[in-house]
Amino acid sequence: MPRRRLPSTRQLLLPAALATLSLCAVAQTRPAAPPAAQALYPLIAQSSQAIEHKVIAWRRDIHQHPELGNQEKRTAALVAAHLKTLGFEVRENVAVTGIVATLKGGQPGPVVALRADMDALPVKEQVNLPFASKARATWDGKEVDVMHACGHDGHVAILMGVAEVLAGMRDRLPGTVKLLFQPAEEKLPNGEIGGSRRMLAEGAFDAPRPEVVFGLHLMSVGNTGMIGYKSGPILAGSDAFKIDVKGRQTHGSQPWAGVDPIVLASQIVVGLQTIESRQVNVTQEPSVLSVGSFHAGSRYNIIPDEAKMSGTLRTYDEGMRQFIMKRMGETASLIAQSGGGTAHVHFEADGYAATVNDPALTAKMAPSLARVPGARAEVIHKSTGGEDFSFFAQAVPGLFVFIGATPPGQDASKAEPNHSPRFFMDEAALLVGVRTLSHLTVDYMAQARP
Image (tube, rainbow, N blue to C red; front, side, top):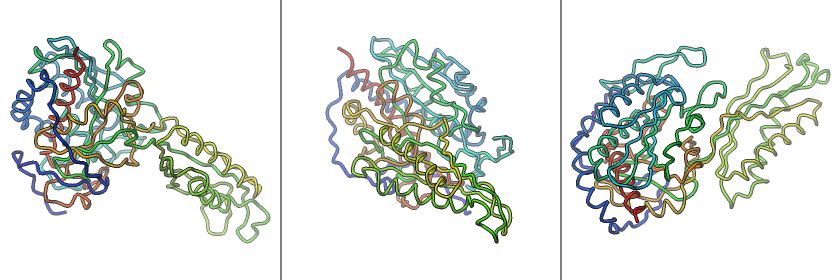
């Protein structure tokens, strides 16, 4: 594809509407911040601007050397070395390659956790950049190309920058910061449990336990300068499923002599959609049930013994999630029985819960988002994407926001989406991310002080 020119790191951050995320325009006021936070704003502005070139350099280095889930050794080493020079207490090898780092401020106050995911995807990069990935790795027993196609390289660089900003004002910081550099957000092969759940199981929120957790995600569907957020569910729960349909093999010219699993499986696909269209209260929350693969047979004139399908279920409400799962099992089994076969629905254990922004925390921090310099905060609709930040936000109140990453002036609705081999990030968005997490941190700490 044609080479895309990188934007200047000093480029003015102009706001624009998030298209695919269907922004609801909301007039934002900028209420006065707590005095203790206001005093730190000039330091945030100056230090974040001063280290922007470093943040971009970190991002490019990580982008050029992407690593898959639980393989992020080089990335983790880069992060750990940086944090140690800043005076953080660093715990390494959490959940295989994760890092938990703590910085106690010079004044008493709450513990605030900030999270960045580190892993890349098994994708071959198709963007003509001087630091494009040429990396390959082994994934599920196969050699694959590797690319940061979802912006996690930017997330790591942003949080490294936030660490430097906050460490520079440590004596005036009214609280403690806990940084979470997380592996394996994009899941692991064979349903292995990793990422945030394993970090929590290995004590990521222990001693000291955070009061709140903040996270962000770079998204190409928004222009640089946009901060998208909403109260309540913002990302869907994500559950992968497999369906095995058993029949009885026979010659294609004599279907009555066997049980056709292809016909039964086809009826099951249609039956599953009637759960969505006729059994779920669509006025409560949306949901998506998609069959993404269907495999059966090896020859045109043989009706096989079995058919196999797989797909995804996306929900925002736990009660609805459990109802749909139950009805999927019943629907598949009974349809198969009606034709003389059997069917079993299996849900993978590594499913993600819905990411829910705590309503009280969101209302409290919305003014902070409105005060981020060079940016504009807007309320957005929920997305059907999934994130394992959800488990951090189940453990303590959480707030997860989106940062637009398509250059100003370009139509973000036509930008290559996250996970595309042509995913492109405007590096000016990194400064917005650094300032967003820094403002959320100091504002929450200042508001929590007596």
